[in-house]
Image (tube, rainbow, N blue to C red):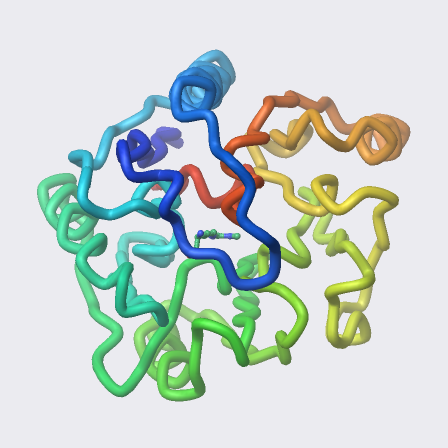
Length: 254
Ligand SMILES: CN(C)C(=N)NCCC[C@H](N)C(=O)O
């Protein structure tokens, strides 16, 4: 199986990115650029080929490329972001995926859907509803993915920006989350509350390895005790903009 991931370098306007649940604090652009390069290098060191979506310098949040598409098998569902300010970001992602040979579908108005609201594991696709994603967006995603055998489940989300701001899944399907912002943990048969907010976001690099923020050392230890290998990266400048490790890439598996 080839392992490729989309990434998009930070805009010079990164510091103007949208904020919903946290207060604005100064962002160090040079540090953000170095952290992004280290994030890309970490993916590459783990055997992932990275493909850059052309930069979108006028879009402050464009580094958060995860929000522009939902990948499922050979299908790329291009999103319609819930924030007007982010709508222009999808064009570059669509072009790259088209050139790579993926089938393309779109979320259309009145639907809205952000990739950060979509958590996939083993044929089930949970979609956070209540922030950037609406019911029409969930319904359209379900229609696009049904022929591929996916089961799409809308889940309430009122306390965090995106579903993956609140929960992600470990390789064994355990859903890990920061309990304060999880509306209903009973959605998942196996839910594990983690001791630090940045620890609730993992990117699966392979069946035994996760990428996570270095700002959650106790959660890292918890994952290592479960037998996982952890790759940790500094993403402080993106965390200041309500981003996390998942938002900075889109994994393509085929
Ligand atoms: C899982 N997460 C959090 C994401 N996929 N995206 C983060 C986007 C942050 C951006 N400032 C915004 O407000 O859109």
